Amino acid sequence: MINFNNTVEYIEKKSRFIGYLLSCQNFAEVETALQELKKEHKKATHICYAYSLANPFLEKAVDDGEPSGTAGRPILSVIQKRNVKDVCVFVVRYFGGIKLGAGGLVRAYTKVTSEVLK
Image (tube, rainbow, N blue to C red; front, side):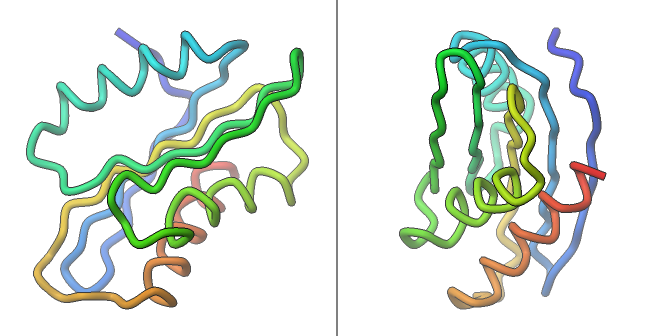
């Protein structure tokens, strides 16, 4: 079982966002955590994430079906602004039936990431 460093939950217009912070050294740890979250959250609509590794330097953002640039990119942007390395932030979303629009999604993913990194 993966030990996440921090978790937060945020509700926006009935959509539930759960943020997970993982300290990691390589992509294998990210992939292991992602598979575990997929098992734990089988009914989740999306599991979006972004990571920044120091050595070798590697960054990636994944929208997992959200409109392009509305989930993974905002998560990565917060990680970059905080200048943290060797972390991955996952945000699990359960769709609440009300569309948030691109701006609403960006705000929600940014907020959850900011909170989980505190």
